[in-house]
Image (cartoon, rainbow, N blue to C red; front, side):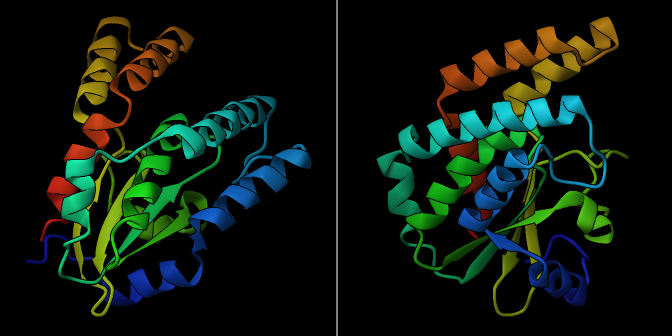
Length: 204
C-alpha cells in the first residue's frame, strides 16, 4: 500500500544526488578536515556539531549491533526496498540513528540504503515535513522498482520525541541541557527503539 503521494520522478531525482552510507560518511569527514559542515550555511557551531557527530557515528559504526530477532525479520523482507535518509552532517539525531539504519540495511538482502542532503533536496524534503518543519533525519522507505513511497521515519524515536516535546513545552527552547539529556537517552536505549520502530514500517 502506498502511503505518500510523492512523485516517482522526485524520488528518482533525489536518488540521482544520493550517497551510499560510506560515501556520506566520507563527505562529512572530508568537509570537517576543510573546516566546513554540510549545507550552504556555515558557522562555528555547525562545524562543532559536525565534529561531535563524527565521533559519535564512528563509535556507533564500530559498536552498534542489530538485535538477532530483528535481523532475522530483515533477512526475510520479500520486497526490494530503497531506504533514503534525508540528513546533514551537523544533525545530532541523524548521528544517533543512521548507523543503526545502515546496519539494518546490511543484514537485509533486498534493501539498499542511500543518503541525501536536506538542503540539496528541498522539494523532496518538503514531502516529509514534521508539522511545518524540515526536521531531520527522515528515513524514507521506497519501492526499489516503482519508486513508490511506503513510509517515512523520524526525526526521532517516539520516546526521544516526547522528551523534546515536553522540554519545549516547559522551557520554550531546545538548548544544550536538552541535547545532553537526549544523548544520555540514546546511549541508554542502545538503538532498541530505533530498530523496533523502523522494522514495523518496512515489513510491508
